[in-house]
Amino acid sequence: MPSSSKTLAGTLTVLIGLLSHCGHVAHAYSSGAPSSACVTMLPIHGPIAQQVPSPYVVNVSSVEVLPSGTVTVTISGDDFKGFMVTAYSSDFAVGTMVPLNNQAKVVCNALSITHTGSALKPNVTFQWTAPGDMFEGTLINFKATIVKERVIFWTGILSAEPLVYVETSPDLPQSGGTSNSTTTNDPGSVLLPTATTTIAPGKTNQFPGHLASDTECGKSKACFHDCEAGKCTFIVSWDDDGDVIVMSMTYRVPDSNEHWVAVGFSKDQEMGDDSVTECIMHDGEVKVQQSYNDGMDNKYLDNKKAALSEQSGKLEDGLLHCTFHRKKSYPRDPLIFDLNNDYYLMVAVGEALNGIKIPHTFDVLPPVSDHRIDLQAMENVAGEEPPTNVLVQIHGALMIISWVMLMSIGITTAKYGKAMFPKINPFGVNIWFQIHRACLVTAAVLTVIAVLIMAVQCKGYCQIPLIAGEGKNHWPLHPVLGLLVLVLTVINVSLWPAHTSGNCLIGCLGEPVHLYCSKKETHSCYLPN
Image 1 (cartoon, rainbow, N blue to C red):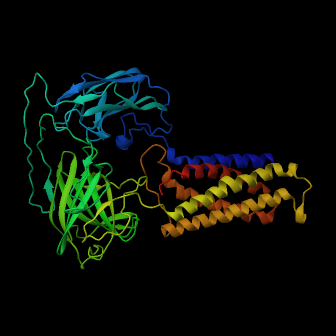
Image 2 (image 1 turned 30 degrees about the vertical axis):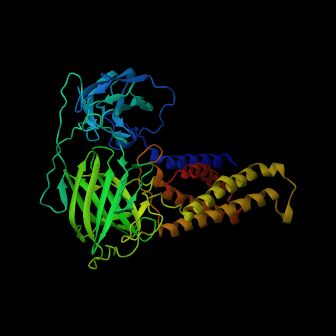
Image 3 (image 1 turned 90 degrees about the horizontal axis):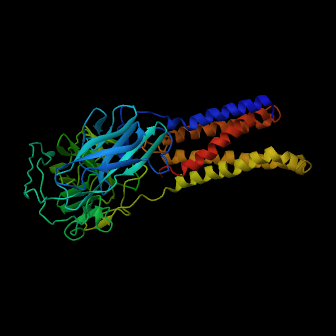
């Protein structure tokens, strides 16, 4: 290949490489961790966390803490620029962070604490206040992410020893407590409890941080849940009562942010064309509302309270709970499905902001029932991940065959085949060129088929939602770059009739596209199904 064509190929390789990484744009937050880090506790700095042992330690001032008690937490070690710390119990964020100086501020509804500036710090000290309603003997660990430099950071740093939650101290009298709740006149909402409950001495929680399974499921009421070994994240129960279905939803919220839980009635096991009823927290209230899944978009109905009555809800002991009556038939709105029919059930959960649902993540899809459920029957159904999408897997297999196998063989043959097979010319054409052409034409055809398969699956252009997390923020670019690859592949193949005059462009387009696609297909294995 002439030097000019090599330069052009190199330039294209760099440009495509930049495109493939544009989802990894680095954002440095000198004023503290962004809200997207509330779940992942990962900085959006681009590189991965250090794998060597951390030079930092997280110490607490006491090994025990009383209800609503306070402990002092200190981070020390090498100088560092940024940090984020959250207290966890059974993978749930708990308590309230309290900064002691202007080096720190609270984020994530005060569940976490982070830095306020990028100056080097030899150490930092802050306080943590325990909840007032945890169980005796609960263990609390402080988990930290510490940034030494912009591209050098450690995550998952645990406190030197766990903190133990105790209800009484030899120096303090034991106290009892009551729980009160206040309701509003709005039939669609109820105020959350404002008082705490002190649990009797010696009482322990069999599954701290989890919702316990309901032994009445399948006996006195029907249920749909995700329980395993007595531990649940959600339970949806219902009872047939003439013209209405009396439903109840309970969800174990992972933190003190606003959250929502929704049940969908679907004609299949995929999101799209689903009637949805949801319970959502907002301003100390739990509201029950109706919505509809229009494809991958969830939209509220014109009348959010249609077909609903007898609504109530509360948040207590970390459990979001709501009950409501749902009319079986509501002919005035076809988007509210007739519950006299059987449907697949699916349950989704997520966070809310100012009463607006934040879409659930798509890397782990909401559980769905394995069969259509008769809501008039007594069933006890465990939800499971949706079945594997065959078309998506065929698409992935075709792209891997095309770009990891066939294109690699074709390009390698073109590069080394001339010298290896100088005199083998079946049908008057050198064997290296026949192998090269066969591989690339087959790869191009399979690429077109793979793209068409996804167009059929998505009924048009496919969209992948933005998902927070390390290595996931580039996922929405996959369809865009896939179409770019398709266009370049078709152009590359169309240049072949020109043969000699097209060799330069063929090489300039083929090699960088192959380099990018080989990496792209490897990363695509982690995309949501």
